[in-house]
Structures are given as structure tokens and as C-alpha cells.
Picture (cartoon, helix red, strand yellow):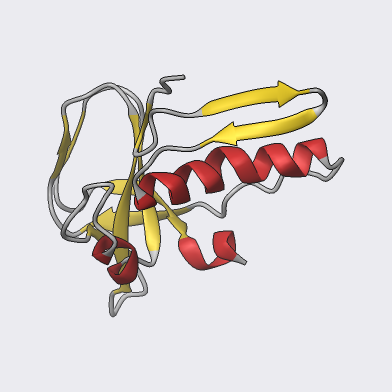
Length: 135
């Protein structure tokens, strides 16, 4: 029940007499991330559809980023395009899974891979725009 995922660690999947049952975390940001990353692909797969992966893009970090834990993490971020056309991203304030303002202010998820990670400002990182995932 405990995934190596942040936000969204406690998740349940069960099959009740042929009916899929998903138990999602209690905080709203965790629900969104687990719905996008786990529930939606499972429903597509169970429905016989091709699983659509998230659109991923490379962006440069506007500021340093440190992640001491081992979980795969999806930070809420805000993208901007520089004068040279380069894509930049910064984490929005309030990354707690209970903080809805982070969803209001974000236009992407910043993908921070498993394992402790340290990035300097200007380093390249993967981002997933939210709008295509929500449609």
C-alpha cells in the first residue's frame, strides 16, 4: 500500500468480484498525482485502450533543488520561456500535499527521479505540462 512516490504514497488497488477498486490518499495534491500517474493508466488499460504517457519536456531549473529522500517525486512547477527560446522551470511555493494553492500556481509537474538528488540552478530536469494530462 505504500508506494515509493511523493506525493501519493498510500494507495490501494483491489479487484472486488471483477470490479476494480482504487483507494487514494487523503490530501488533494496526492489524489491528483496518483490519479494521473496510476488510476488513469489503469482505467485505460482495463478498458482496452492504449495507455497515454505524459508529455515530457526538458527544462532548466531557475533555482537549486535538493531531494534527500529516495522516492520518485512530482513537484508542482511553473514554466517560463526565455528570450532564447529555452524553457525554464521553478517549483511553486507550498509543496505540501495539502496545499491547493500549489496546484493553482502550477502549470507542470517537475519529475525528480528516485534516489537522493541535487540539482544546481541551470541544470536540466524533466517536466510534464499539466494541461495535456488533465484533458
